[in-house]
Length: 170
Ligand SMILES: Nc1ncnc2c1ncn2[C@@H]1O[C@H](COP(=O)(O)OP(=O)(O)OP(=O)(O)O)[C@@H](O)[C@H]1O
Ligand SMILES: [Mg+2]
Image 1 (cartoon, protein in one colour):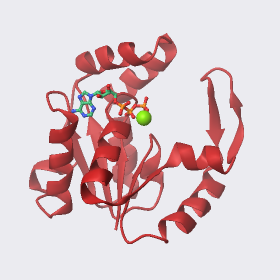
Image 2 (cartoon, protein in one colour; image 1 turned 90 degrees about the horizontal axis):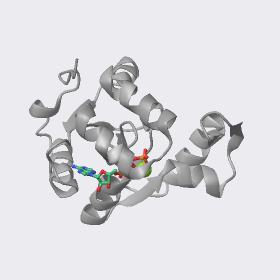
Image 3 (spheres, protein in one colour; image 1 turned 60 degrees about the vertical axis):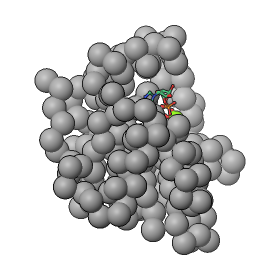
Image 4 (spheres, protein in one colour; image 1 turned 135 degrees about the vertical axis):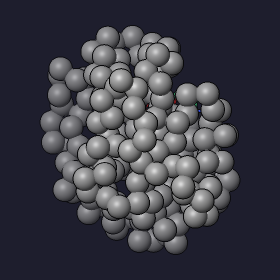
């Protein structure tokens, strides 16, 4: 099974995915790291200060890698565009998210773009257009450990509380 974690920057993807994989003893594949390791970038986007991933080649590489394991946790801002059995979108109230982002990034464009994306449910909407099993977890007042507990509920079929499309900040 592939459980994929997505969400805008600062929602806790990396912290939560690592913890989840550790608890379940599942393989953790961080898509950004896989792209780096295999040098799967198209070009450097100066404005966004980031390497743009070659999605087609990364998808191929991810399929090859994930096939080696029974169970995988994967994570990325764009992981909803990759194969998965369960997709979890981590959400965070923009007021609190702003604080998390300011602690992490000093660059205002990055903060602004991610806050705006969270505000308009961007990732959830994109995900719901292409996937059936999409769930959202509100992390605002949760610890990473509590967030992992919620994800484990979803994996165990207790999905009712987490059906995507219910969180609206506006
Ligand atoms: N309930 C929570 N779940 C996850 N992370 C949380 C939670 N509460 C606070 N945090 C904190 O939010 C911060 C951002 O987490 P993290 O770096 O994992 O985000 P990310 O989604 O991977 O961001 P990026 O896209 O920038 O890599 C961390 O300091 C983390 O400890
Ligand atoms: Mg991260």
